[in-house]
Image 1 (cartoon, rainbow, N blue to C red):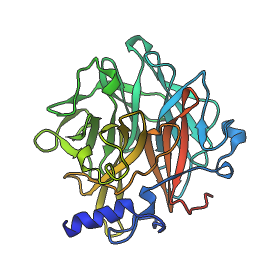
Image 2 (cartoon, rainbow, N blue to C red):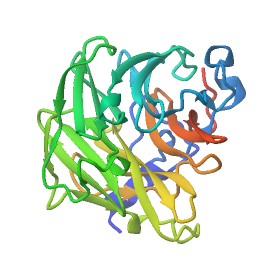
Image 3 (cartoon, rainbow, N blue to C red):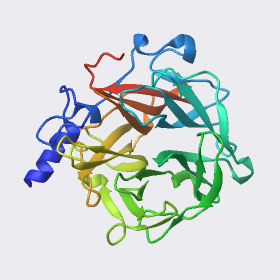
Length: 335
């Protein structure tokens, strides 16, 4: 194993050491990347959410899922966010927006930002900042789309996303596997990730609309590379629901992290993480899941705040999906 790969294993798998506002470098554990623990009762304001921890949005009639957080001012020292999510039944869903002043106690009320029931509903919201605009990606049965907004609420310039030559890609009518994620690179440009079957694939774009493979067919990670699957008795693992984010180390190196859902034969699921230094190259798996446990955790999204990070994810609340949250490092006391 090379020194670079070994350092990256430490970077994405460590726990117990607080990260500085800039990410700790590869020689130190980085606890902000995970593992995560679910939020406790005193870490959310249930009088605002209306739900006990770790749930942030839990209503059977609304069926919230697929969270996509957005830091309103882009400053990790402040906590105010918008939380975008899918609401509604499969086939008749829409994208809504909540607000939370503390990054986690989301308002009970929400605003609808995308509603396309005529196309079989929406799924897979992904939100990035591009200058002073909020850029929202999402999928429908007709394909992948991108829209832009100045206020994070009224989205216009809806444009089809074009993806070329991606090994993980699928037919436009296959909604069950259409989930994807987009990250904006600090240097400019965008990366789109798709998880399907045993692999994660990546495509690159300068304008955020037309994407082309990174490498021969875009494959950057396979479930066979999970170092803990055999040890934990998982057997065959399928990959789904990617979420991509970037960070900068104390030495100024770019880290690309891709969180994903690992689906195990028999119905169990976990949240995993793979990462790399730099804009290009294969992803390296963390040495353990970043979250497992009850409720079939899936559809992870992560946002960093100074010395801690919040995990937003979908989990079952009885017979229906809901949005819950966790934090890393596990020793942190939330403000």
